[in-house]
Length: 278
Length: 264
Image (cartoon, rainbow over all chains, first blue to last red):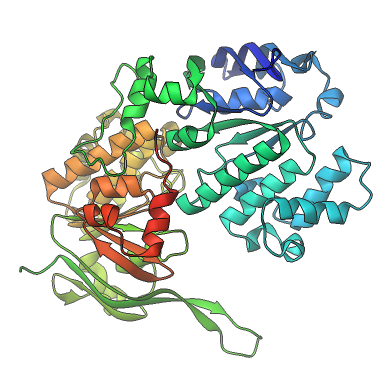
């Protein structure tokens, strides 16, 4: 393991202020992401996993609605202290995102080519032949007939294809870190496998780090190197993916893993989380 | 053998397609192509397949959210697929549906009492207002929600709670057959387990019959007595969960099984 991690998150605390009350979405979250590593963040809805990923590039509402404290260090620079103008150089360029629902993340009124080209023009002005770069990025995500797809609009594509376009867009600027926020939740199992295989391939090929937010332990087992488990805004367990899945130490992790129906192990009832944990 | 609760014979469903040119006739799109299956009373039949395989369309055509173009749908031996909408009314309360997305399937402007009492007003017009309210409280109890939720609105609930309200709404008219269209795919694993257990408890208590549509093979295997695998509008394989899992005959079923991420 390299001595200095690529990204270091220390004591990240996120508080939302609304309706005269404060809601702590994340408190004291700390983790490290090494280069070329796949780190999975697991937790239920409301555990703060997406919010803490959005904080990396200041994508949350500004103060006073949302107060973010702590330190997020990337190559010696604290991302939280950057101004809006400075952070926009990181957003999409160094840290890129893929969101859960490709149907609503793509702009319905622009063609695929326009949307990918927009990202390239902003972040990589040195590229002169933008069109070729778009086609190449579509090729990389294994889209057949990229020239044809480039001219299409999001509604003409299936969910799996839309997600590929999202990945192509995120990768077009050669990011160091890819934040994949539940990239396959909206997709079928067979398409899910293709997308995960594709991400794993791209991660190896480019030495890119992936922060994978998911609640699917199956994907964690197959794809992630390390895992952090979050609950109510706190990290309850960290470790290598294999270790956490085989010997979970925190009762919450044990409960979550026990809930999963397993193929070929039919039980009369599914285990649920004990009430004190849910 | 006694009569199955539901029998589908050679069902085909066409959706209106697109005309190649404006003066030409449009070419219908066949979503379900000549499928037949039976659902015995009190059992759960699982229906799996990819998006676009026609599994939801099959469920929808049983309760007339999709047209039954060809074939027959027999409920206790009576062909309900070819009845007029008016004649179909008595069967509407025997067959109910639970939808995939608990966020979009509840009316945001109606409180839980309104959501649960609307089907009662239609199918049990003889009930007084107080009786209806008492029944709604009873329904909430069945799905393990406290009675004070009656006056709350959908946005105040979590996904799992909303799905329970969707289940309560389906149960309101005392149906025998419930079509569950991906009822747990939008939920977290822990909530998913609770909702699946609830569905199984209700089946035992009320002798319900389920058509369980999902793409998650592990959940389908857990809940079903019989599984149908659909691909491109056809049933490609049918069998007990053990047969499908341990001895899949079709290439497509093997692909589906291989795609499920395995723990450890």
